[in-house]
Image (cartoon, rainbow, N blue to C red):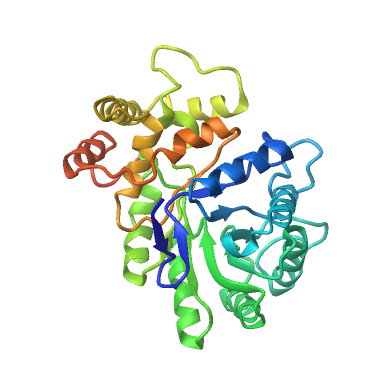
Length: 326
């Protein structure tokens, strides 16, 4: 697996990042350990989680994914080999400061994450989403202090609008504070405009690493859904139906993915990931799996790059340079 610098830092991460939202939700602890083992055996080193994962599951208070990862690292004794990314922002306790990007929430949440992860530092600590109620200076100063204390090596952002990301970068530059070194956006072949309109040129200009989540559009780009058949009865399938089933562009993009997959002898999921990996702005798409078998298919995208002609076909099918109708 190829290793890439995270933005303008010296940190080297694998070209695929293992997302762990499913740990303690749709994958139990034993399965999660097996997935982590398989990912690292394949050369992966980049793991992404969040403190809130996965509070929406029955009986899950949040923090379960971090706890599983912490137990795995302790059992394997491999903390130094892991590039560990987690996030802060969501509600983790009751009260007005139980969520957000205030100094109080950040400094308390990081201690909880360190405890669950059984480590004394986090490689990449990310703001999980934009917080309009907290001055950006307060947020960035809190992150700066964590970096100075050695509890965090680098900081990143997720789900930020371009104007807020630009504001954060300017504040860090003005004060000489740690800056956001990466962005984790929602970006895939059928959800392009949100990233490409403003965030992509901003990341390119400032040299931010880009770690897109939902690279397979929630499973739509795996090819398991069909135009002429209703989706299976599930909450996720219903979400896919609402988002993509009425979009001719989405179906055209999927058909182009399937055609190139057939020509290459690859799976549609591998081609959809390769579309991201072929773009110089992308550092590492975030992949998730509920089993080792699912993971191994996705790992088949490692090292896979598309030709200019294949990229042009996919871009044309998915709406040209920008997909304005996300």
